[in-house]
Amino acid sequence: MNAMSTVTAIILAGFAAYIGAWYLNIGGIEGNFALLLFLATLVTGAYWLAERLYFLPRRRQAAAAVESAQAQRREELTRMGIKQVDGDVEDTKARLLMQPWWLDWTAGLFPVIAAVFVLRSFLFEPFKIPSGSMIPTLLVGDLILVNKFTYGVRLPVINKKITDGTPPQRGDVMVFRYPPKPSLDYIKRVVGVPGDEVAYINKRLTINGKPLETTAIPDFFDEDAVRYFKQFEEKLGDQPHRLLNDPDRPAFVPGVEDFPFKANCHYTIEGVTCKVPEGHYFMMGDNRDNSLDSRYWGFVPDANIVGKAVFVWMNFGNLKRIGPFH
Picture 1 (spheres, rainbow, N blue to C red):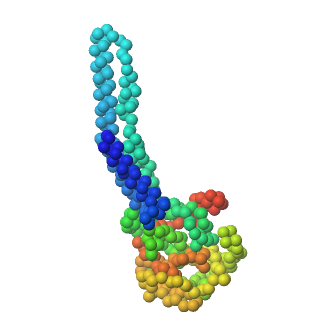
Picture 2 (cartoon, rainbow, N blue to C red):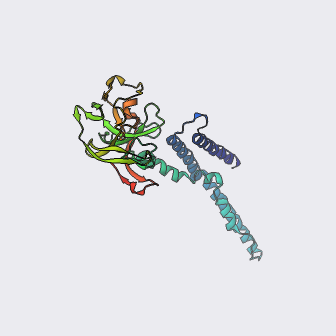
Picture 3 (cartoon, rainbow, N blue to C red):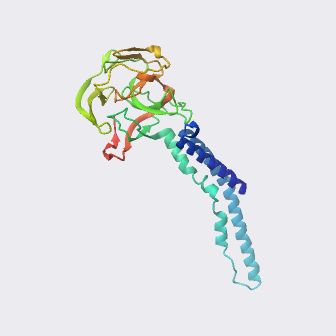
C-alpha cells in the first residue's frame, strides 16, 4: 500500500504542476482542459476499477478474517466459562474497510469527474465571453452554454465528428477553435456557409448578391467604452439579431493575415468579398468594427467547430442577462 500511496502522490503532483504552470503561464505552457479532463477520467477510472475489483475485496476479506478470529476467540472463552470479552471488533472492522487517502482522491472522485467529462464532451460546455466582439448580443462576462451535439457529436480532445447532426446555419452563434491557433476558442456568428459568396462592402453585408435587410434602431450605450454606438437589426437566417457599427472606423480591412483559400477573397478600400470553400464557414462578430474575424484570418474549417452557443446561464454583474439569445 505504501507503494500505491507514493505512486498516487506523484500522479496528483503531476496534475497539480501542469495546472499551476498553465495558470501562471510558466514556460509558455498552453493548457488543454479537454485533454486534462480526459486524462483525469482515465486515471480515476482505473483506480475506481482497481478499488471495486481488488482493493475493496481485500479490505473486506481482512475485516471478515478479524470477525472470524474474534468469533473463535469468544467461542473458546465461552467454553472456558468466560462470558465477558474485551476488544471492539466493530471499530477494527471499520478501520480496515476505510478507504486510504489515495483512493479517496482518485476512485472516490471518479463518478463526479466522469459525469463532468460526459456532460462537457457530448452535451453542453460552459464558456465565458472574454471580449466585446459579440456586443450587443453577448457582453463581456456573460457565462454561456454551448450545445455540443447540434452540429454532430465529436470525440473529445481530437474533435473528430462521429455523427452528422445539423450543419451550421447562417445566423448561428458558434464556438470554434481559432484557425491560426487551435488551442484558443473563439465565438462569432456564422455569416457564410459552404458555397456562399459573402461581401462586406461599405459596412453592408451581402450574401450571394443579395443585401441583407437592415433596420436602424436606438443607439447602444457601451458601459465599458462609455460611449454610444450606432445599432442596427439585421435579418440573417430565421431570426433577426442586433449589430453595432462605428462610423469613425473605415470600411477597409487592415492587417489581413495569410490563410488557406485566401485567393477566394478580394480586398478593396470598401471592404472584402469572399467565396466560402466547401467544408468551411465565414464568421463575423456582431460588433462589426471591433471584431477580429474571418475578414482578417480566413475561414473556419468544419474540423474546428466546437458547438452552437445557445444560452446565457449567468452574468454576475447583470442577472437580467440570463436567458436564450439569437
